[in-house]
Image (tube, rainbow, N blue to C red; front, side, top):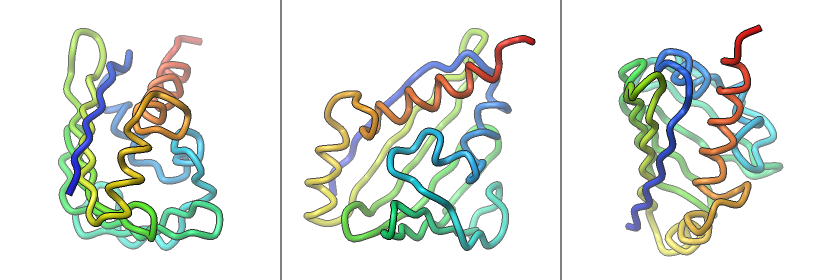
Length: 144
């Protein structure tokens, strides 16, 4: 199992950051390659809920393992390329929210792809997606 950590500071309150993070209709706006989310069972703010994230024709079933709005969410995800768990903490800092995200991959193939996604800050990388998310939330948080 390989573990990767990324962080950023978003100029918006934790409630807004968490609400955007857990809105599956918004995933294609900031998660590289996501084309749609289907099969939502339950609520994004409830452990035990599940949904499927699609990367073109490749499905990634996802389960919410733990959630504490607006501070924490832990999910298990998986497909042939990348599977594992994601744990995200949202902490008030200054006038904004610090996001700490940790990915723990499972399996040899996932470890290889996880390493590729962990390198740099290009659009599809873990850090690149986090920065795309930050820009999305901050753009919407601007007054008027």
